[in-house]
Image (tube, rainbow, N blue to C red; front, top):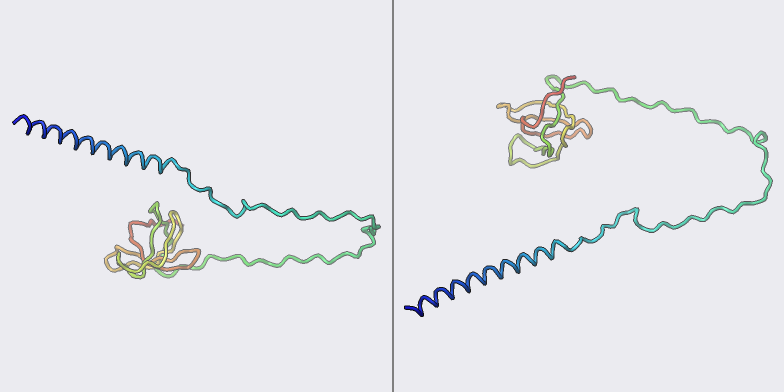
Length: 159
């Protein structure tokens, strides 16, 4: 009777010691792994630059600026200013409201293939909605990429 009780107590204490010991070992392992600083990243502008030699000064005579014939100045070329294209009938401008951005899909289904993404607060053009009005087809203004996204991730922008 007493030997059985002693065996039980000794086994219980041994199990507690093994659990505590393994817990401490795992904690020390992870503490040591997280205390190692990561390798320093190397950026393109970190490489040493090669010094360009400075041109030597010469004692040659320079001609006065009045003797130099004037060079023709280039005339400014007219730049084309983009006019905002007209929206298709029934389309309106919108803005993405989901903070992480959204994925564009090929079809109005959650499991449809992903064709791109749109960032938070990006302006888009809403082209159409599906039959149950839960998905909308959009076109991004910058890249002209089209795809479907959930209606709750976009809000109409007043023009």
